[in-house]
Image (tube, rainbow, N blue to C red; front, side, top):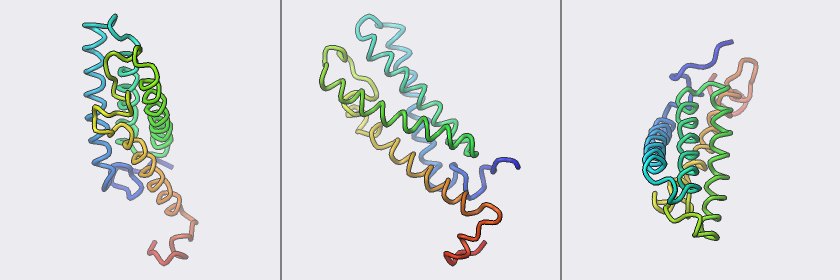
Length: 155
């Protein structure tokens, strides 16, 4: 059986998912560009911070693509990338507060994303919640699943 199309109700690209994909795309572009410039021009100044920004950029790219594709396999990869992102924000945020010498320049995830209005901290939470909702809806719409009828919904 083929994976659902973008217009299917269980797609990650519908409704609020569109905004989520757009924000992830913006962060993919900004984090990657910032890291690229910093690594190319002043890597010796804060190598750990710049490499972590590059890692964040890669995670945002993966999340953007997989949320945009929206099929079952893509949703599974998106869950992994959003989970990794949340752990990364928490770990790097804490590390940057404890060891300020390692972070003379900010990263996307340092101090829990304060430089980006804490969006890096809440974005993976919203991503995981959206993925959970879409996956639940997809399970309910599987052939042979009468859960939606039992809940009073139309097939």
